[in-house]
Structure formats: C-alpha cells, structure tokens
Image: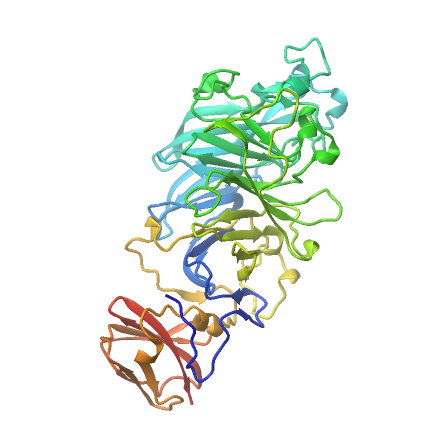
Amino acid sequence: MRIRLLYFLLSFPIFIISQNTLGTVTIDENVTEGYTLFTINTGTYLIDNCGQLINSWTSTFTPGNAVYLLEDGSILRAGRTNTTNIVLGGQGGVIEKFDWEGNLTWQYFYDSATERQHHDIYPMPNGNVLILAATIMTEAEAIQAGRDPLNLSSPNLYNEQIVEVTPVGASSANIVWEWNIKDHLIQDFDATKDNFGVVSENPNLLDINYTSSGSDSSNWLHINSIQYDETLDQIVISSRNVSEIYIIDHSTTTAEAATGSGGTYGKGGDILYRWGNPEAYGRGTTADRQLFGQHFPHFIRNSVSDNGKIIVFNNGNGRTPSFSEVYVLNPPIDSPGVYTQNATLAYGPSTPDYTYTDPVPGDFYSAIISGAQRLPNGNTLIMEGTKGRIFEINPSNTVLWEYFIPIDGTNGNSVDQGVLPTSFNNNSFRATKYSTSYSAFDGRDLTPSAPLENNPDIGSCLSVLSDDTFEITSVVISPNPTRDFININTTQTINKIEFYDINGQKVSEHFDTYRLNISAFNTGIYFAKIYSEGKVISKKFIKQ
C-alpha cells in the first residue's frame, strides 16, 4: 500500500511535477508498479518508475526496431545491419537474443539481396519468432500483378512478408510458416491480368494501385508492426502508408496462406478485417479516413478494461493540424475471430470506443514510430516516440508518470539533467511496461542502480513511491537532522537497511541493526529504505 509521507522534516506533495527535464519528470503515487523496457542506439534499458536502471543489454547493432522481454529474462531484439539492397524506414536485418546477464545466445540474419527484416518481430508462445520483412518484386512482377506503371517511381516494389522461424543453435533458424501480401492483391487497372476485379467488392484483398502519402515508392505499404494474438491465432499488422490495420489468420498452412481459403476462418491468407481508411478499398472517401500513419495496433488482453478490443497509436501524420491520438476500437464480430462484413459498407466501428489526445492536441504529436499499451489495471502506457517521451495515464486521462529518455540516440551517451529533451535525438520506437510479478523477474537481483541521466535528481520520486506496508508512525529516525549516528526506532524486526542519496544512488547497505554510524556521509538529504518482515518503507533524513 502506498501512503502519504506526511511526517518527513522536508515533505513533498504526492503528485510531483519536478524541475527535472530528463528521466522521471512527473510522478504520482498511483502509477502502476512495474519496469519499463525500451531500446535506443545499441542499448536496451529496463528502468523502474524513478528511472533507476534495473538491467541493460548492449548490442553491436542499432535498433531494427522492436524489443521484447521474454519470460525467461532474455530479450529478443531486432538490429539494423548496414546492407543497402532493400532500403526503407525502420530497416533491420538481424534478430538477436540476449540472456539476462547480457550474453548473446542467438543471432539470426534475415538480410540478403532480395529480403530484409524491418521494424518488428514477435516472440511466439511456442518459442518461434515471427519476422516482418520486405522482399523485392521486380518491375515485371509488379506490372504482372496489375500495378499501373505510372505508379512505379522505382524499378521495383516491396512485397511485405511475414515468416515464422524456429531458432536452431546459436545462429540458424528453420522457416516453418510464411505469408506474403503479393498473394492477396486486386486491381481494376489491367483487365488482362488474373487479379483484375472490382476493388470495392473484394475488401479481403489489397488494391495494388491505391496510393497515398509515400505509397508510390518501392515502399508503398510500409508495414510497421506485427503483433500476434494467441486467443484467436491471428496476426495484426499496420500499414503506415495506406493508413490501415489488417488482421490475417495464422492457423493456415503456408500453402493456405497463399490462397483465399483454408485455416480456422476459411479465408486462407486473405484479409479478415481492416480498419482506418475505407477509401483504400473503394468503400469511402478521403473524409472517411480515421488513421494517419498509425503504429502498434494489437489486441488488449489481461486488462481490467477493454479486453478483446484493439488499441492503436494514431500518429496523425499527413493531416492538418498535426496531432496524435490513442484509439481503442471494438471490431464488430459475428463470432470470435469472425468479423462482421457488409456487402457495400466499410468495416466498423464507425468511431473508436476511446480516444486520448492532449488537451492542447498539438502538444501531443509524434509523426512516426510510437505506441500505446493498456496495462492490467486499466491505465495506459504511451510512447511519444519522436520526443523520447514515455508516460502513463489513468482512465480519467490524468498523467501519473512522465519520463524523457536521457540517452542521445546518435551516439548512445547519457545526457546531463537540465538539458532540454528537444535539444538532442532521443527517438525510440516503442516502450513496454512489465508487471513486477512477470516471470522474467523471478529470482533476479532487481536492486536498482543509478538513473541513466547524468547528475540525476530523483529524491522526490523516491519519497512519493515509498512502498510502506506498515504504519508511518511505527518507524522513526532520530536524531533528524544528525551529524554522526541515526537510530531506527521501531517495534518491527529490521532485516535490512539501504541508504540512498538524493540522486537515487545506493551509498551503503546494512543488516539486522538499529543504530548506524553515518559520519562518513557527505552533507545532504538521504533516504533510508528499511526492509522488515517482507515489508518496506522509505524514510528521509538530513546529514549535517
């Protein structure tokens, strides 16, 4: 239970908007307990709510882009190679697995002259890995698929591909499943081609000639995420350039995935559901478009609110004025995994069930990257990617926690507290918060170390987040202020005491003691973190 710390010599309010410019700048006692994971430059970082480092991993590759913390404490991370055969935003090429201690245990390159991983990967429940990749369709193949040559500004077109691989050894994998968008195209341009048809009558297929912002290039679709839903055995993908999200069936064989039949839902690899821009399949106009360069759509599971719905970060890129939103939408269904489809109308819903944006909309805007995660308690974690801003809101849209990444993405160096986050590049693709009960943390040493920023100041944060499960008056530090000794006055059994300075750095640790000599401490404010019978409390004191 978190309680108000009313009895410190120097007190802080429970809700704090500090003078910090980096790291944790806003904190509320009701923030969700957990650890937040993100990657920037060659580093991957796991932090607590005060920005203290819990663990970190280092690769030789910059992000390519997603990272996941696995149940065994490993991370699965995509990295960016230096090849130039396939070039697009979010390019990667290598998938790596590091154990908790930072050892590289698996490294698999999906990177050749004709194929390249990009943006996202996904760790499957069975230990396999889904890989999002781009492959090359030659100009002849694109025209054979019905592409209008006037919409070919490059000599080739990228086919978006998903492969599922089983890791083998330290550097290999077997491909066990494959899906390609090129097998699910329609067009009304060239009647001599096999896939000629009426676009509006075939919403389960993708119009190869629909172009919007950026989609006349090789990278016409720019799929920027894949997420797997185990409940339905379905995959959710996101096309930034078409501003649509798509759901496909994963229960198919590879052969069925290339057709329009087979699998649990009887449609093979065709689109089961789409949303965001009905103009793309001839069932709407530009005015009906609701998504603008969105990222990270996925099903909400294991939350007290909105289970079974889809959450998506709507970047707002390409509309005026520019602002971002987080949507939660509830796809109409005929039965679980079977989406209601009208013969002439666009897929529903007509509007999201929930929308978050800033009270001053333009203040919340990330043209690219970013994401949102619904937490188990109903709060929402949001990554405003181009600002390196991670924040958590409650169901009333109150900001409970706000963190600016204090790492320069250009060189990987820590930045000084006080520097404005707008003055350097701290872009990050996505952030994920993991519960303290997540199995990855079982048996791990989770003792925090210093925050990532230089010259950190997290004293107020430590004060707000004192985890106190016994009465505040049952523990008294005296004298306070003090020069030499402090006494811990309590009827509780003390197991351990940790001392932290105002910057959140642990300066000493003691066991089974009630009187301590602190004469060697520098003058300043300190926190005594007292462990007692499975409980913990933080007390502040001043060393004169």
